[in-house]
Length: 346
Image 1: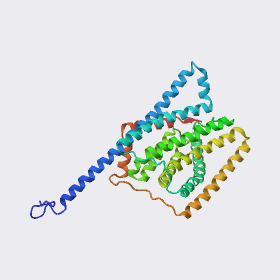
Image 2: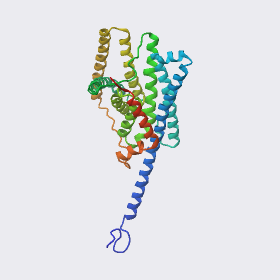
Image 3: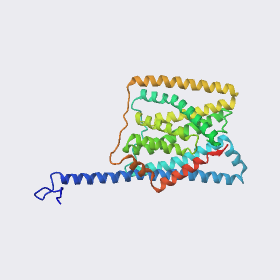
Image 4: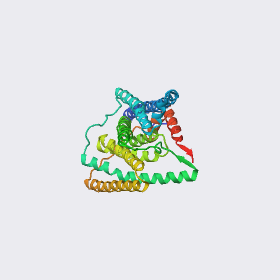
């Protein structure tokens, strides 16, 4: 049988060596890129495990100490006290592990740069932030409607931990703004849209945005927020990429959470009718601002094309490299299990 890899003189055809060399180079690139993605996934998985296990251990210790020191239980059971604990846990068990992840990835040369500088275009960035208001409204109403239908059909109830929150004084308002809006906005955006998303951009902006949004959503640990946080996470990620800075997504995150603080303040201090009027007025303002920003942004002709990233791996291979490793699998199991605890029989 004739060997098609050689010509009639017995020598390899012209370019045969180059093709072998090119295939070898491509295979090596594929192995290297899989290793980079797996490294990111492993470090991220460990960070998530530390967050959930650390929070659980801290909660157990508080419950244990409250048997001997009743004041601890009183402070923790208080709405602001529990949110203060949550903020401290977030700083300790998300901030520190992910900071260690960033430093470790940077040492390996794969961390990406945390975009904490100015934006590419301040005007476009401002409009992208303001445009999120209608997205918030539409997503919130749609997801709430779907949640209500599912809960009624299946006889279950979703809880988010915010049902018993009350704000009855200026001090409460300031503390809740700090614990609910400011700290999570800064810490979660630096963590998710910075430390996690940036190194993933090597493999495509779209891939990085979606993966970081899914992890961001599961970290919230409850069924009420999962659909909304996926959509919000995708938008926050896009804004970070489009503006070249984390500050717009930090502002977006703050506005989103501060809206909950305002609505809770209305509900805690006003009659039901008056609170609904104030909330409706706030929604109208958000809608008007969003529509205005959308029209202004549309005529700016400012568009940022998402980079496709390296071509050595297909989407399935990239997802597998990030998620199919022991630490990330354990982290996913913990996140899903925590999320399922937010479902109870109605």
